[in-house]
Amino acid sequence: MSKGYWLSQKGEDHGLNSQPGDIWIDDGESMAISNVLCERRQQDGKWGEQNHDPYVWLSILVEEVGEASKAMLESRFSGNEMIRYRDEMVQVAAVALAAIESFDRGTWEDKIRL
Image (cartoon, rainbow, N blue to C red; front, side, top):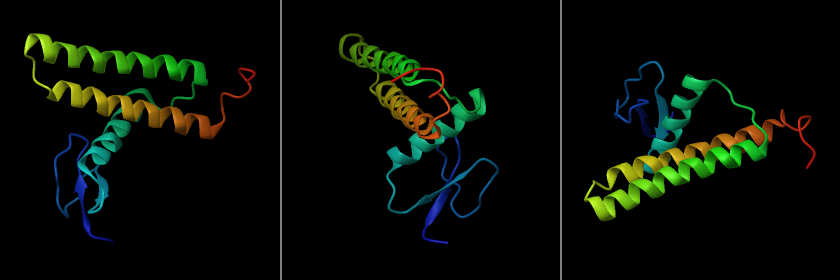
């Protein structure tokens, strides 16, 4: 096994001792990538495999971008912490990844005409 560590779905470093649901993170991967992969696992755990058409995925993604924008504005004008913005951006990236995964599976192609 390459150098790295086990990361919990909550972003906790479990070092070399894995627990159920952990993902292996190579030393070269950034914490941001780790957080996005953990968020993807949480989404799949909550919703199962999602196979929406690209139109639906784009709507979901734009809604997530809207939440990130709201968090940024609240930080700027209400003094809220920036961490919520980062958390929302992790969700944006995870939804984008889920949309790509769904696209690659091609299960939506019979539902719409591109």
